[in-house]
Image 1 (cartoon, rainbow, N blue to C red):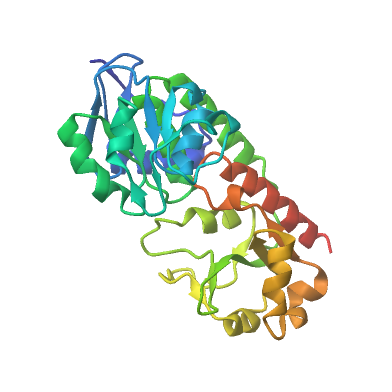
Image 2: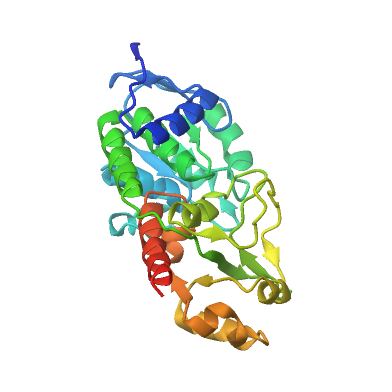
Length: 314
């Protein structure tokens, strides 16, 4: 098996960031021949003896990465909450929110299963897949850097490193083209609401597992209104409406549609007195672009950048 050195094609800043991430995971760059060995997000050595032809992707983010690499025709199984791209809509379902069916996975005769450690997927599936000798790879959500790493990792184990490099280069080119603002708006992104009335919001977290949503805001030129302290890394992503009112951000983003936003705003006394409501900077944004840690996050960065530029011009 031939192991080649890493040669970065990124901008200097991106190269430094990715080099650190790749060092952490100890990922070798391998020529397009098999067997291929990589180290996954759990630190496991994962070996693909031959190029995978029948891939099962657990969670939307992994499906979207495989499809973006031009391999959607190789996907033979997805979870029940994956709807994009259109090419996978008729693919067999192997489980959903309540768990995953090992029998359904085995029935598809996969030679690679890609998953993320959420909804007990790894605990439920890895021991059984290992026992059956089915190659399985775990990737993590994390930040935008981690998403780039996931694209690279999946491209390697699927035997399409060139496509992976092209996708990452395009991703980085678009990130580098995001305009810089003289002053960043203070932003709160509401991602949902829980039964007790608390709001779910995008925040940096100590574990960084879901930090990509907050990272999108930062990459687009915004500041996190709830995380103003540089070294403050809160773990909770829930807050009361009263905290939102007291924070009074420049921009409020709501991941959902206008009807859902109208319903939410009608239940919070004082909503229309907030700065963002007064200036017209309460905006709905795409859940698919902001809440799925796949290639479409770059679309999310560009969409938020456009909003932030409008705010800067007022």
